[in-house]
Figure (cartoon, rainbow, N blue to C red):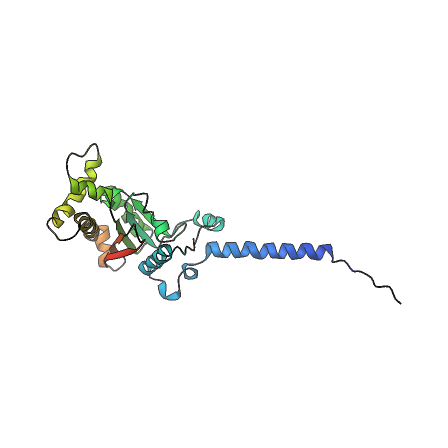
Length: 234
């Protein structure tokens, strides 16, 4: 009876298989990191505002995709940025736009200041993104139980430079006095709407870009309890 021989797998074959698998894995990671937004949103969600709201939906449901957060994406963005939206939001630690909208490196141009007030530095930052980076959308993002707005509603003596914040918010508080509902939330909403109007009428750059149809400014309110971003102005 002929003797059966055992043929061990070729070591080189095993090595090549592992190398191939590693190469495929690296390629997949790189593709995920550099993927276009279409990988995260469907083809019908190319509009910047729709992309933001889709990200909030994922965040609200704790279904994060964490797009554009790889080493390859970091290397790619080091060569230049192309954000699709500008977000002017409060500095509150509970309201980070990149988490709220489930975005990654190079997606959002974020400006944060308590009460999301507008001054020359804020407007200049937005003008830079809109004019030089060609970002087509600005979202003014207020939020539930905003401390800066609450301090303004309560009034009294405001120490130090904090008064620069409350003084900017006062017109919104005055506008909502006597309105039915929660005074703080009414003021939060009015403050968002006021800042939106300030940006829409800011000359010479922002108002001109809006007139030309190259820029859109919207306002929204983030709910700390539910994670929902509610559009207040469109």
